[in-house]
Structure formats: structure tokens, C-alpha cells
Image (tube, rainbow, N blue to C red; front, side, top):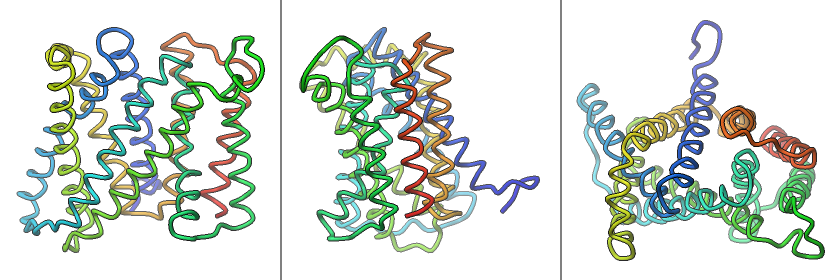
Length: 304
């Protein structure tokens, strides 16, 4: 599928990357100005879940598709993936208070390497020589990014809160990816758009309910603060929905490796956002580490 010479999956990947970067930017503002880490995470789900559900209903009505029954295996995969994304998003939001925007979103890209490592440990899968080289480059980049700008010496230059949150977010995002793929594959339907839409709608609804229950138990006042933040949270929800559907569309039409390669354009978006919106100028060391991590991820998705 092409649009004036450019494949649709490339357009979808770029749109998804841009929308995801916009969502992170809006979440950082929510965290900085109005909400707690849990509140900013909840806002992302609360204001996107209804839009996803409406989009699925419209698609089913337009296509006349039958919605298949969902098995217990589907819900297990979906809920594990949803919980992984909740925790990963919370890590990213918390990370924004530790380091600048570009570095924070770059940490999330360790998801690519974490997925490989999880496959080796859990499934006994091996990677090629090129894969080990790409992982090594990425690990070096993460260590460099983990070093705080202050004059902290010793192991604290590497083992610090920012490093922990960044690596953990990558691990949790990889858990989410595995959960979502597993859930989608259990659906008995030939239409990949329908499978993706059902999975996305079920996950976002579950995430919204889970986060609402957590905040009701721990900080009821934060729920109303999230609702009152609708002016900023609504566009964040729209960006989240566009990004999610963009990724699903791209993965439906093309090999995931190619989609991830194109999707790394998000790092450029985040770098520009950090400079132009938040007035945060990364140091030469951080900029070099971001470039090294970009090279690592591109090597992985293109060569492995």
C-alpha cells in the first residue's frame, strides 16, 4: 500500500512516533505542573480509553465484523501487558523529574534490547553476532546516559535513580509488548485490524479501571485533579490513541523490524522537543550517548 509513492506503513510509523513523542511531552507537563506520577499515568489511560472504544465500535459498524469471544488466555496476556505498560509509563513519568526530556525518552528505547535479553533467559533463544554488537553499543550508551551531570564520583555515577528507572521502563515495555502480541494472537478472527482494535480497547479499559481503583485506595483527591486537568489531558488522550492505532496499523502492514527502524525517528522528535519546548540543552556527552543508542537500535532492527 502506497500513498503518492510512500508506503502507508512508513507514514503510519512516523505519525505514531510523532504522536507518542507528543504524549510524553504532555505527560511531562502534567507531572511538572499539576499531577503526581500516578495521576499523570492515569490521565494517559482515562482520556484515551473512551476514544479507543468509540473507534472500535465505529470500525465494527462500518465493516459489519463479528466480535469473537475472548478466552481466558486472551485476558491473561492482555492484563499482564497492560500492567507492564502502566508500570513502564509510571517509570518514564518519574524519570522526567530526574533527567531531561530527550534522555528520558531515550531510556525507554532499551525495550528493544530488553526483549532480546528476555528471550534468551526465558525462551533460550540466541542472537547473532550482529545482535551482540548492537546490544553492547546500547549498554555502553545506557551507562553513559546513567551518569548524572553533577560531580558525583564512584559507583553512584552509574548506579543511580535515573538509570534504574530507565532500565526498568525498558524491561516493563518489553513485557507489555509480549503480552499484547500474545493476546492478539489468541483472537479467532482473520481481520488483523479487528484483532488489534479489540486488544487495544480491552487493555486500555482494564488499565483505566486498575489505575482508578489504585488512586481511589491511595489518593482519592488525585482522581478529581486528573479530571480537572482535562484541558491538557484531552489532547494527550487523543495523541495516545493516534499513536496506538498508528503502531498497530504499521505492524499489520509490514515486518516489525522495519517498523521499529522507522519508529526511531521519535528520538529526533524528542531531542527537538527537549530543546524547543522545555529549553533543555543536552550535554555533549548525553547527545553522543543518544546517538550511540540510536545506532545500536538501528543495528538491531536492521541486521538481527
